[in-house]
Amino acid sequence: QVQLVESGGGLVQAGGSLRLSCAASGSIASANVAWYRQAPGKQRDGVATITSGGSTNYADSVKGRFTISRDNAKNTVYLQMNSLKPEDTAVYYCYVDYPDYGLRSWGQGTQVTVSS
Image (cartoon, rainbow, N blue to C red; front, side):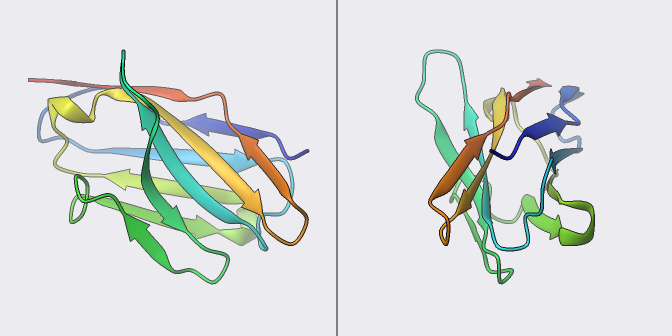
């Protein structure tokens, strides 16, 4: 089982930026990776995904503001978040999926709070 550790969350004013990191305990080269977020009282929703081949996809609410990227050499995935809004406030989770092995894993989450 791959362990995931997210970091980079915090408190930021609206319009500011944060970069989240998701460090895996093993190789992510063959994994599809995603960032999800969950606001209080709401369901966990997908924010961005990046495939093992580097293709990306974003939720409409973050398109043009967030960028997902990966560094396979460091077993790390990033989420650059710009022009943050109060509605981006949530716990952000990293998720990896190894389709060739049927393995999936979640990180513990990192809190992002955007003040108005």
